[in-house]
Length: 206
Image 1: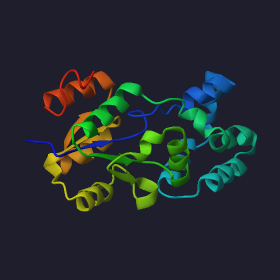
Image 2: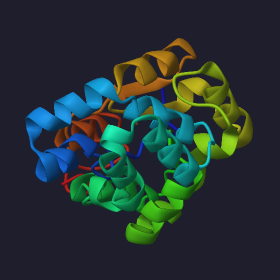
Image 3: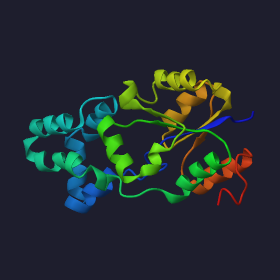
Image 4: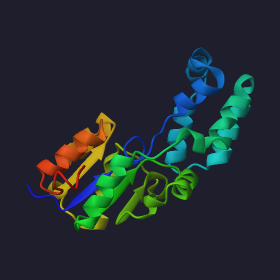
């Protein structure tokens, strides 16, 4: 089936997202594991992705866990250190697709404030043909609603979308809707998939 547009997740596909690595560097692996076992940091972050306010969410959680309050507040104050760099080959693939005329959409679980922070550090995140951020839409992957919004707003038939994401549950939800999918593990394997689909040449995908 031909592909009319490619849909990219952002975190761990186009930019690194490594909160555990950040905390390991600050407090060591053992204490980080203890922190993450006792404090629902990822659950809090998922609520931010749903549209809850960033600073207020982090600071409220810190008040609930005073023994970890400083470390929890790092999630707000040091957030950019948790997204330390872009993934250059993935970015080249995104830009290569656009250069050859293939529309590129973003579909990402992201907070409203954190997305703006990320765009400030990684300006290419503002260059998608369409951007679908969970906090703006008040729904998250893998809920069916967020996929339906993209289909409706872009007008692209589900079976003519190619979606890449690093989380299997998000890929499975798209597959159920008839999207073509690629579970992201490395940029090189995504490049091979784009070449296989004849969206890029091997030279363009390098």
